Image 1 (cartoon, rainbow, N blue to C red):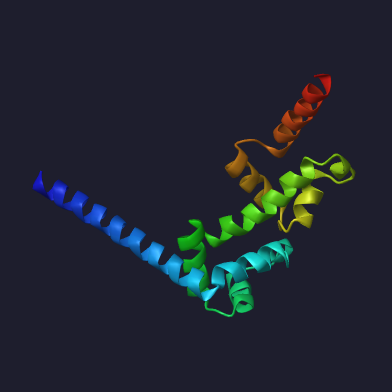
Image 2 (image 1 turned 90 degrees about the vertical axis):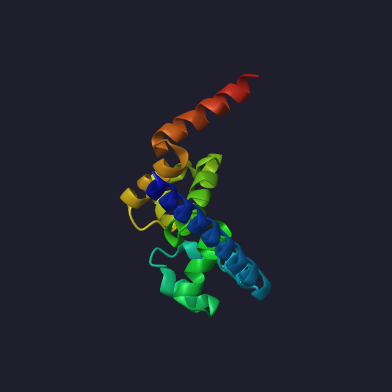
Length: 151
């Protein structure tokens, strides 16, 4: 019984230490301007649209190491590089799907423009974040438009 308590105590202590380190790293990166530079690269230069963007390329653009970039994304945003990157891509896809004039492109076409490198990676991330397939999401959006136009 005491072994179990000791393991639990160790795991709990490790989590607290890890959370403290992540928070202190995030504060350091915020002070050095890395967070702002990262946001600028993603939101203004739209680096996420590059399907071959990887951690080394992003780190090079930030002027820092892969390890620091990874710690920055994990610590400040609380997600892995891949999820961070695909969240930007998905945000663009969702915005375009909600626009009336986006119907000239296929869903996959919109995803490719946003930087997804394959249909399967797009569908996987879409389902992961929305709990829907892209077509189910579109049906819901279309029903909302019809519903709102009736009122």
